[in-house]
Image (cartoon, rainbow, N blue to C red):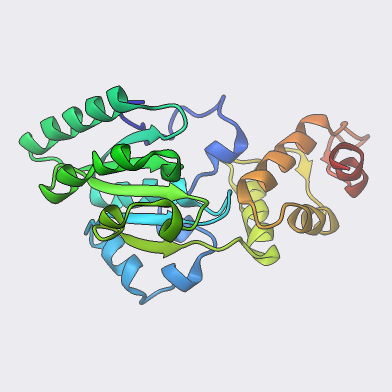
Length: 242
C-alpha cells in the first residue's frame, strides 16, 4: 500500500472518523490501562523509542490510530499493509522502501492490519527484517495472538491488549468531534443533545469509529430547524439505526 500519509492538513473530504484521528497521546481516548500518565508505554512513545508490538483488540479500539501516534512521536515513516489484500509482492516492496530508509538514516514502522490473516510463511517473512532493524513491526489483530500468530513472531514483539471503549469514553469522543473546529463540527450550527450523545455511546458497543460514523450520518440527515440549526434528536438515531 506504500507509505502511509500522516498529513491531516487536506482532510476536507475524509469521513469524520478519519478526520478525528488523534495526532498525539493527549487526544487519544481510552486504553488508560496502557496509556495513563506514568505508564511505561506512553513514556517510551513520548521519548520516541520504538519496539515491535502486537496490538490486540476489538474493532474501533484505536489500534491503527495508536500506530500512527507512535510514528509521529518517533518521526518514523510508516508502511501499511493489510493482510486481507496484500501478498508477498507488497511485503517485499514495503521492506525494500524500509531498507532504503535505513540506509538514509530513517526509521520505518511496518504496520500490518489483520496480521492473523497471514499464513505461517508470510509471518515468517518479517522476522529477519525485525532482527536486523530494517523495520519496527506493529501488527493489529482482533484475534488472540497466542492462537493465531507464530511463536517466532510473538517472541520478537510485545503484545498489548486494547479494550473496548467505555460509554464515557465514547461520549468523550463525540464531545471532541462536536467541539473541534478544524476537524469536526465545532463552530457549525449542529447541536448534539446530551441524550442523543448517550444513546449513540450505548449503541456502538465501545467502537469509536462506529460512533463517529453514526454521528456523521445523523449530521448529514438532520433537517435545519427554524433557528437555522440541525439538532440531532434521539429519534433520528432510532429511525436510521434501528
